Image (cartoon, rainbow, N blue to C red):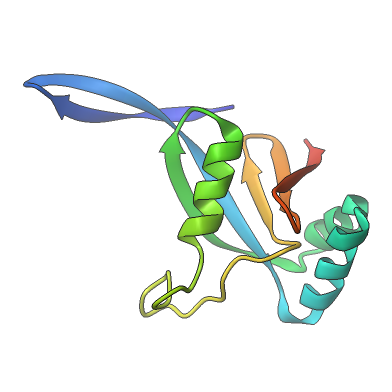
Length: 122
């Protein structure tokens, strides 16, 4: 997993925190219901096909500290929810949901009904 370094000042000393990019992709309107159905059935290859045929759009990239992948996937999901207001501010965007894809390095994770499923790798 490729990452980059972000400097922080801690107690007068500069420390580096290694981060990784978590690219969030939402399924487009016309395939949203189908993507949810595919995820329910565990058919990640159909989501991969929809992704590769451009039925998904990149909506945001989160840079999170390198650590537990599952925890960071949960953070991406949580940060991309419209709880009290739009998570993208003035740029209206729906909440992340089942069937959406999070790319981390060369791995593509699918939001499942509970947790995440490793869909495919490059």
